[in-house]
Length: 74
Image (cartoon, rainbow, N blue to C red):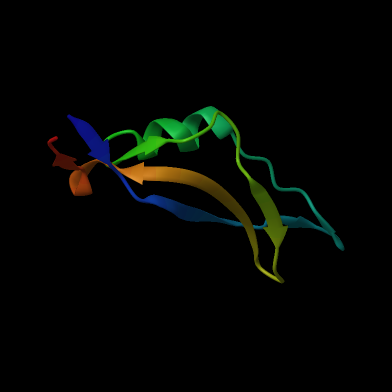
């Protein structure tokens, strides 16, 4: 029996904090991963993308949704 799971991308927004005209934002990857563990299984150990908008740092992970797992029997 095999498990068929769809790979998804999950992005977390972290508000940017500014000091003068510089962004002074930090984040803890392990804390983000722990927050996602109830609903998602991470496909890798690190974020696959980091990007920044005017007000947010965007951190993207590859995940499997634990609630959408289906089984296919042969």
